Length: 268
Image (cartoon, rainbow, N blue to C red; front, side, top):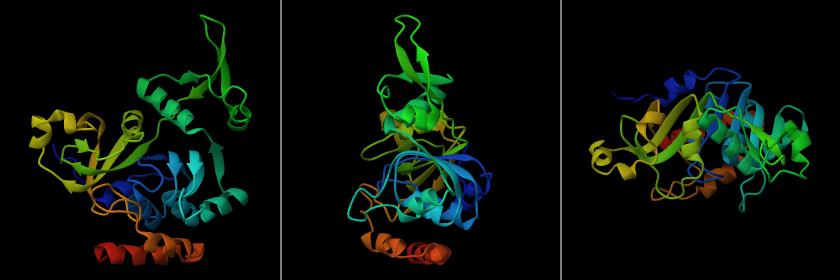
């Protein structure tokens, strides 16, 4: 059965207060077009989960869509500097920040994918993050060693942008996979946005090409330029002009910026 849906339709299914996970990493293969649609539809009080995030968190903070973030790294990690709208929201007290290490987010997602309430890690011992975030400690019943217990993270919905997918939800990721497969296994609903819809026979003949199986994918959106102004390997590089235009835009003018960028990309 086809899982094709429009971006507007799937974003309309997001409830205010939902936990939303994004795939990709910083400015690479991130679902930035989905973030624009979330902004246009005026979603509020969302909880954003991602290991390393840049443009989409800055955009969503500018339109006051976020109430909480669980993140490991925030910043453009390049010539574009810090995320000013995110910083303003955090400093003004409008945003709750659960600062994590990237691997504790991955651990929480992995716990959800395994169906267990938490997973233990050793690396946080001695870190202020234990008290800052409120991680609990547990004892290994075999050795008595004390470890940090990372609570499961189960997003209500995840957006993962890929290069190619079929209408059934099988998807191919070209280049680094990041945490996308773990996110898909951990989330209640998974949306794959793709640059191109391809014939599903490709995955039947070569199942190893399916980095994401249809088993884990609920919806598919054909969405060329879905990662812009970030990059999507083998399709396009980072759009420096748009990022500079975005960073120069005041928060109160953000909706005009979104509409202008969409008109330039899609003629809408």
